[in-house]
Structure formats: C-alpha cells, structure tokens
Image 1 (tube, helix red, strand yellow):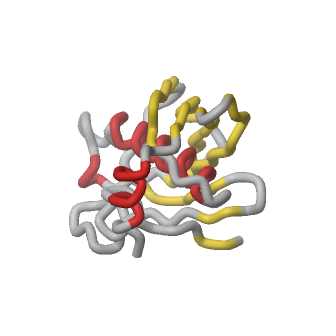
Image 2: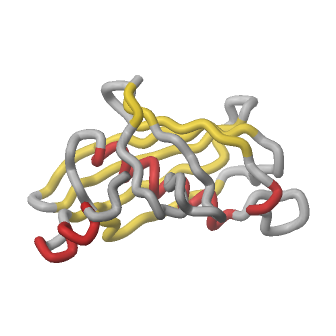
Image 3: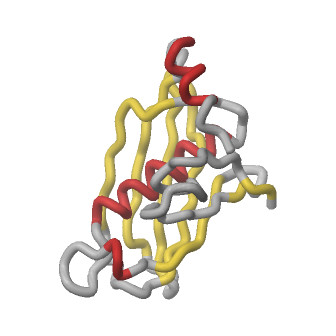
Length: 143
C-alpha cells in the first residue's frame, strides 16, 4: 500500500502539529485506510474517545480517498452515524472510498471499526474542488 500525501500542520495527519493525531493514511487501490489507537488525551467522557475526534477521522479518511486519486477537495457536507462508543485504548481501523460524482461534487463513504471488528461509526461526505485561490493555499500545506 502507498502512503497518501500529508499536510504538515494538519491536526489529523500532520507530522509538524504537536497536539495532532499524526495519523497515517494508505491507499490500497480502492480505498483509503488508517489504523490508530484511541489515546486518552483525546477523550471526551471518562475513558471514552471524543466523538468529535471520531468524526474528524472519518472526514479525513474520506478526503484522503479523493486525494489518493489526485483530487484536491474540501469538505462541503458530512453526516456521521455513531454505532458504539470508542473506548480509550481501543484500536480503530478506518476506511474511506469514493462512491460517485455529480459535476464538481464528489461523494464518499467511510467507516470506523474497533479491534473486535465492531462498527463504531460510519459517515457519508460531499466534497468540492476549491476555487483557484483557495486551491493554491491548500497546496502550500503539503509536506
């Protein structure tokens, strides 16, 4: 599998973001994948990984699926459905993939499962190619 581009200061994947997750995403030819542990520093309730971080990871794995296909996009809309809490210390496996395109809108799906193979959250996303001025700013972030 090939590692997908990273953005230096990104909270999710950036190596230079001191408080970030430093998650690594890979392309298997069909979908973006990521494996990480639910660190206590990102907890919400006691011993439970924050749901907002789960949503952030799903957003990232879906956008990485598009980035792997050389589509530089930004999130336009995302829906998350939580199925089970993620406990601090759980191993999380994330997958994201493109499901379609409607003009300049790219459609995706993503899911997160725990180390027992249980679905903990799933998402759908809509992403747009940014206008040229924003696109140039985004490319400045590449590592």
